[in-house]
Amino acid sequence: MEKLIINGGRPLFGDIDINGAKNAAVAIIPAAIMASEGICVIDNIPDIEDVNCIERIVENLGCTVKRTKNSLVIDSTLLNKFSACTEDVRKMRASYYLIGALLGRFKEARVELPGGCPIGVRPIDQHIKGFEALGAKVKIEHGSVIVKAEKLIGANVFFDVVSVGATINVMLAATLAEGVTILENPAREPHVVDVANFLNSMGANIKGAGTDVIRITGVDKLKGCNYSVIPDQIEAGTYMIAAAACGGEVAIKNVIPKHLESISAKLTEMGAEVIEEDDAVIVKSKGRLKGVNIKTSPYPGFPTDVQQPMCTLLAIAEGRSIINESIWESRFKHVDELKKMGASVKVEGRTAIIDGVNKLTGAVVKATDLRAGAAMVIAGLIAEGKTEIENIEHIDRGYPNIESKFKQLGASIMRETCEE
Ligand code: EPU
Image 1 (cartoon, helix red, strand yellow):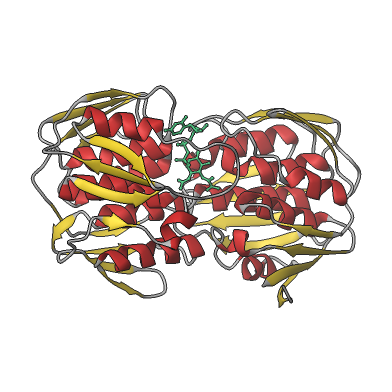
Image 2 (tube, rainbow, N blue to C red):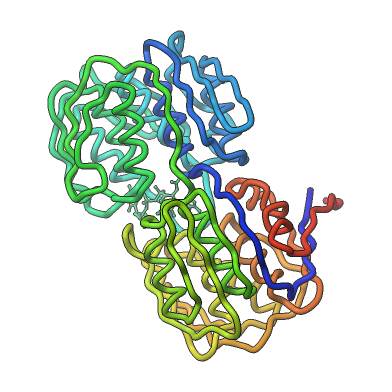
């Protein structure tokens, strides 16, 4: 067990590099197992626990995986198992991408139901609807999703809700179906586009990812390729918010500024200065920022995954701010922790009403989930005195080297081993 110790109150100055996107990498790795010829060399892989977990899962299925610091080499040519039922599969959300990948490649899959952050009910009905439209029979038995098809045939799928997971999962299976699949009302997140680009590099024929309609013309097989994962929009957004909260000037490098526009716009509305360069954003902030209202929504809207870090910033902004969390029903677990540090936040259903306070004060708090953990790190950085954050295994699932990156910016933050 480890914890983070932060002595708050220092402004942040300097620059940091953003790593590859977690939510792209954890989909691209399952996609890579669809290659029946050649090897996939995937660069810009973030060094995080969720990647380690999905890497173990695909190794367990029979793929050969070699890891260097930032890249993965996956050979799935000898893969012949279509059942993934281990603790790792149960632990993480993205393991559900194995259903689409194995169904595409073998027309059959048995995958245990996924875990992930406790942020509300996380149904997979839209994934199932898509698989069934392609001709698969789907049942859930003994905690596993079992899918099987004589053959997969392209179909029209209209998603009832905008779902990143369902869009990617059905896209995976449809890539190796016969004929054309049209996905309507798909998610348009940058990582959806990245997975489509990766599949196209493997020989797939996917058009329209990132728009309202995705058209997939099935191909017979996929082969290995070389690919580099896009930068992490959410990691970048978290550091942008930290810079705005602590004050100072931070250049966040190796990003795609367009992916960050909704966050840049909110920080600007609050009174911070955000300068966009080709592959960097610079956030400058001094003095107290103004409160704003936020509604999370699918891309290009304000991402739910930075709502929790943003809540910390709003906790010390001037005046009242209102957050409406429209994606997840229970993504305010960080609020009780923030209150221990003096924040004034009231949660009513999916709404948080935040009355900005002058300062937060250090306390012993915990990371209740991944992004709640990031919210607590930012809280610790701005608070007066010492903050201890427990349960940081959640943070390690998604943020590479978080304490060394903040140290590089001048923060006083360190990791300590603690007794259970
Ligand atoms: N939904 C359904 N039915 C489905 C699928 C989703 O009703 O079959 C609903 C969900 O309940 C939710 C909404 O649709 O209300 C959006 O869910 P989505 O499927 O888009 O979420 P996900 O694929 O499970 C991914 C990210 C999450 C991120 C969401 C939204 C991964 C591994 N996870 O989850 O990331 O919050 O998209 O952008 O890609 C995180 O990184 O901290 C994280 C939680």
